[in-house]
Image (cartoon, rainbow, N blue to C red):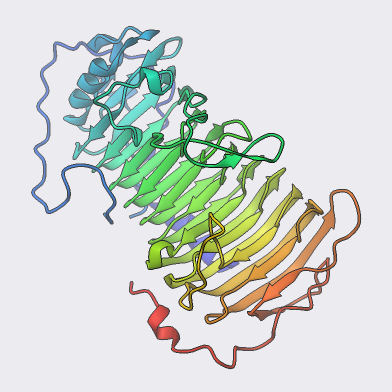
Length: 473
């Protein structure tokens, strides 16, 4: 995003937040008696699915228009007042559901998870619609059941905590959400890399930790989120998401533990967060547009990934994404775009600016031959990658991989790739001066280190009808 667009984006969010009078409510200790009867807001009539599944649902607004400290404490619903024990072993799920139901029915309601307690809850969908300004404030610790053997038989093994059909909702606090994922990582299903570099078996049917689905105007901030069985946070079918000051962590070799995954969502900001995990730090899936990422530190991880896109010959569209002022360290990949052969659609309007690399493999990577096995067949169709710029990308790379790698489709070339102020040096060992390009077109505004001479200038001579790859708004 150029300077003007950046300022407009920040001004846009700032004006909305000021207009709604954002108040920080972290650290409150008000209690609410469970004897208070509160009616739940009736569900809206719609054609939306009754249960969370894949579907498409504006910018984050204030989750609590007035400060509850200055209003009636009946807005605060402490889970202990609804029967939660908080000893780390008692199932506190019913108490959380009751507190949610009560808070959902009042404006600016707060579900309070107090500090100095450990609450165990099972797979739960916290569903709306609710009155505006709902806050789920975690100052203590929430933990998942301890591994698949402790997972209740009737519960979904695809997800743990789901927030569904909500508007103007905030998840924040000073506490921790613990996924207890270590026993899931050893299940004998999906291959992953072991500590000696060999392929080991990994998880299947493992739950994503926190999922926001078909919701809008969301704010997530301040929390420590760790050790997910699979993805830590997923945003699917959401509009208007502001993520700030999160710490997400899992061991380096924990499989499929993406930090933040976004798909089918628009107007997403991810800021000032630290993510270290065993898979993508941030992953962007199909149907996503208008994403701004800044002030993030990734690593160890698999870097920041757009994709994978176009699996099973599907159409995938990603547009208008900026990653800036970010550090990627000790990661298998840096900035990666990955698509399957046979897909359709486009990836366009991507800007990577002011990125510091520290011992990173594949610092800059476009891979349109993404495949998880050796049996993938060559196909002519592809997701069109267009208008991607890399500016002020500096640091060190792992010499076992080329620091710059553009492997584009034989039939649908990558176009309008721009490089400027790219300076990448070996972390240790000799300078690898042979970046790889295949059917990639663009230009260098400045000379790169290492030199890149394989990027073709201009436009492809035979590019076909690119209108068939365009995505509708």
